Length: 321
Image (tube, rainbow, N blue to C red; front, side, top):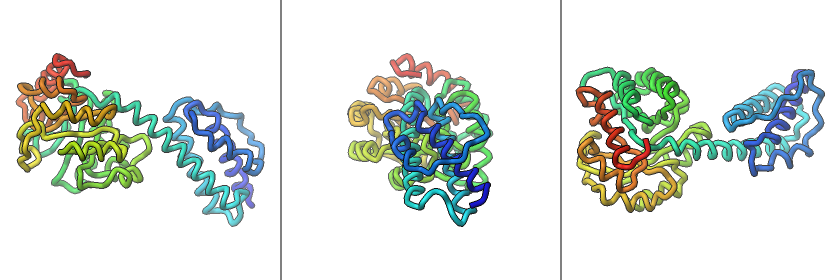
């Protein structure tokens, strides 16, 4: 085996030892139990690094080990790692990645609150969608969603990247509608899918472990199903009559939100559909964690003022903003 291969393996062992000692590893003991069965590595010239201290650092180190493993397997005719042990390492890394990603997503659940604005190039009053997004965030929106149904992905990608940059700078959460590949490409906060889009399990295979996933629901049974699938938050609507998606939907009414929240439980509930300044209070009072709007901000003469007024109304009704 070449010196490069031995060096790669030594680095892999070094990183696995750091991961096993990381606080964010939590109750997962797979790596600690696996390490004694690995061949002894060469001594490294570099000093021992401190274990990763955050979940994000842990995920980054996992990605590094996975890349080193791929390089070791691709470039070397022989390896100090028998295939069955290499498989166990990959499985352990995958389990740890899933556990840490789920922990990060649970933390992000706190961000699903207040005003959630859909940025739709068709609902801007002829203005630049990015300008609407900036106004929404300045007005207090905690979440944005890019919903672009007409343009090809390549055409909407620059807007998605600009929105992600905006959200990162303002501690907001960007959600991409439908397109898991775009969400993965721009590193957005997460993805939103409908009932007939990618199932949650398949979408998870495309997304990074820390990216959240929301799912649309029209019936109580769908809410329960989405929660069972492991959706990080659930949308329920249409609360009031709306045609913003081009299809008239029978309204749920705010009175059904209370039961919807009971079903959702600890999973954040997003109310959507026909909500505006005049009718938002009953929806918040019924238990919605976040209020999702499109035209109420995108079509407003002054989007920032409209967002600020909606945020204030949500807070006045007892919602968290």
